[in-house]
Image 1 (cartoon, rainbow, N blue to C red):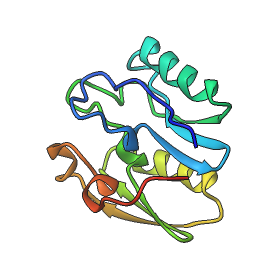
Image 2 (image 1 turned 180 degrees about the vertical axis):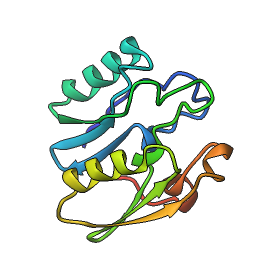
Image 3 (image 1 turned 180 degrees about the horizontal axis):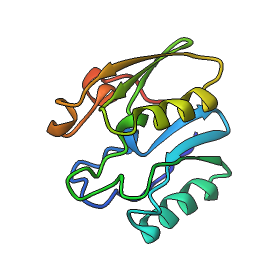
Length: 135
């Protein structure tokens, strides 16, 4: 039982770690590649996760995806129910994100739900369903 402290994403006043990093399995974590937004933040996030011995995989986005208005990486703000992932989509880079999620969670069926209006309020699917945390 270990607590891993990760830095707060720039501009995120609530500290939505569930939109920054998600467990793939017991030894691996999928994180948003924030290097286009803030290399220093990205480096601190990766350092904190690797310090705990985790295999870090990256969710890549096109340059310019993150903006001050759109500072979330909420494709990772999905819920997992047994072998089904329900992934929020937003009409932005949905195909790019979904291809990566399907690769990293290849044993799961992936379903989508459009949350483009909800994300503007500061959260996404994982946030509004209060799925239990854990590996």
